[in-house]
Image (tube, rainbow, N blue to C red):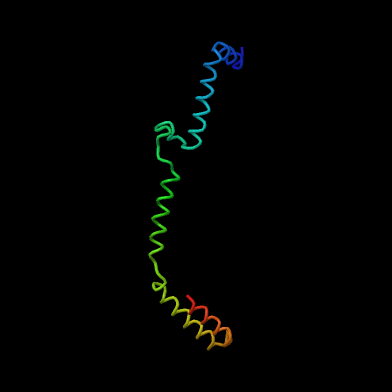
Amino acid sequence: MTGWDVLDRLISSFPPIVMMLLLVAVVVFIVGFSRHGSNFLKYGFKQISLDSSLEKRFDKLEAKIGTIETNHFRHLKNYLGILNGALLDKEVISNETKARMDAELSGM
């Protein structure tokens, strides 16, 4: 007698309603375990969804990033202006290129 024979006798001994409920329970377990992992065994479906907590974290981060204004980067803008002048002095770039770079910087 193999394991399949034992399983066949076990399955055939239950009424169809019980087997249907058992099948539904297995499907619910598979879905819960795939969504929540091993925490599903502890907490079931009543645990907080990971997606909502991540959204809250990103919203807080977005609010912090939104408070940074362009004036905080003025020192970088000044540095790039000086760098443009140094490149022009070393004849790496032409006057036309420096003018375009300065125009781009003034737009920032």
